[in-house]
Length: 585
Image (cartoon, rainbow, N blue to C red):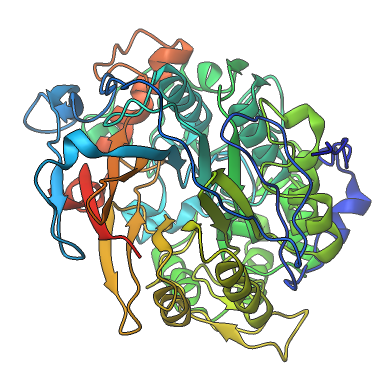
């Protein structure tokens, strides 16, 4: 196959003119993507509507492979080693594997018969946060303690440590198969800001990152504001979190904002878009020049009365303000209460087109593929969905489930649903794994796309119905809910598949997931899911503010975040390390 050359230059440098242009919405119409053979790390030509991936049988490995469980949650999991107050973490017992048989009866002897078909890693909801960004909603903490996390300044350090863990995996935990690729299933960024997009691409592909914006010499945000509703790590102020046992760590903010290096993933990686990647704050549609200007400006609101915070949170939760009109008016009403910060045009919101072009920038290619699933044809069509080859007889489909009309829940347009059906039909002889950001139950937002107001939006129920009509669909892999949850779906039309939702890497327990597909050679297939943590040690040392020390602290702070429900997000045993059995279609 021929190779494509670089399609786009960097779009991460911005100016005031492009900031105001960032308010334009981009619509969904048709999908394209790259194909990747198991041994390749470069992108093949984009598939057109007439050329979907074609599957063929994949040969089994010539020699047996050894399972690789080191560094996985089968071996050990971070767990509290103190009983009250601020709880320190240490090495806890691993999580055992649970066999799920709702969709097929597992047959004895399959361990000795199975053949590995594919293995990959899912990362989701990294939420790389520019914690000094003016658009942040930290002040909602006055009414909801969970609205701001004490560890938000360390998202980059935590993500780099996760990359280090993935790089250290010498094979898949069950089969020992080489890992084919990694997929980031959305909310890779948090504020839809160019700063965060650059950090994400460098975390994944490698490079030096300075997780700072505004004044390069000092932090300018809520954590040195003196406001007691936020953890003030560098001072002895008796803030609300210190009253719960959070430490005084002099030099924390300087360490959190200094330059660090990511090695980048040592395997190909793909990207799926989430609502925080598409929409300012993950919930507001593009289109308000005031909000675009506020994002890069020199004023930041850091506190809000609880009654007003509750009202704003209600408008967001119930989709009463999808274009941010109420939010804009609130900011204007509190202009005199805002604090001065250093303006920074790098904080500008980015459009879907910016997102695509940044992925296509050769500076962020890493080991490939170029575009990480997206192609120049996606840019031309204004789409963010594509298909790609996982193995010779397995394809992946990445959906765009974000709604340009606003709100954090999702849906897909009629054109994308039609493309999905055609792609499934044209690859009926291949196994299919579908990726998206939203889960089936959170695709409930049927608000019209402002660019295509007459196009019908389809909910998760519509997608479930479509996938259930195709017996080659094995799994739907997603995130968004920040929770480990695995659901069996069996359709009247005969299709059955597993929906695999994985917890975020911003809330404890901060996990990613290895997924292996095997043929049991007895009329069944198995999907093995194994959760992994970052490479940072479970134990922390408050005197260690190195890159590794901060990554460990990131995990421990997230465990202790006020209001965090660590049990719920971790999921039950049958949502974690599993064997998911399926009948062969």
